[in-house]
Length: 124
Image (cartoon, rainbow, N blue to C red; front, side, top):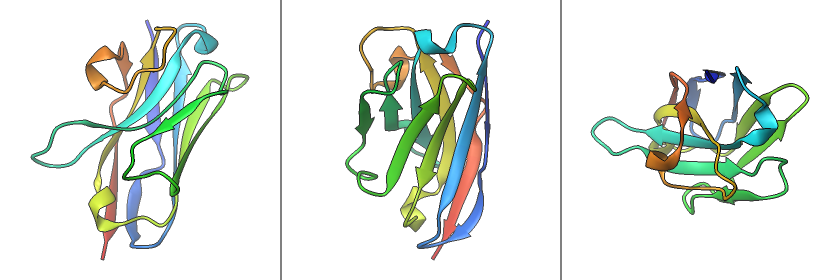
């Protein structure tokens, strides 16, 4: 069974940076595309970024493009999300997810495994 554990969330001010990390265990990491999603109070869970199995392709939501960077290390079984120039509207619980499909997905319902989430709060 795949397990995902996120870390790195916290309370920061607008304009600051945070780096989220997700550790994958239980299966072969390179068999999974990885994604980051977020959910703000009262809102649907939304796509943030995704990366293909070997990191050759990355995808971003328009709202984070140019500010966030997703990366993975298949030797360490980790996927990170570097978040720069944070805005109050980035405040949410951030989730790491794994998908066994060959094509990188952006719909949360298509991901197979989820972490427990880490809170990111950006004050103005």
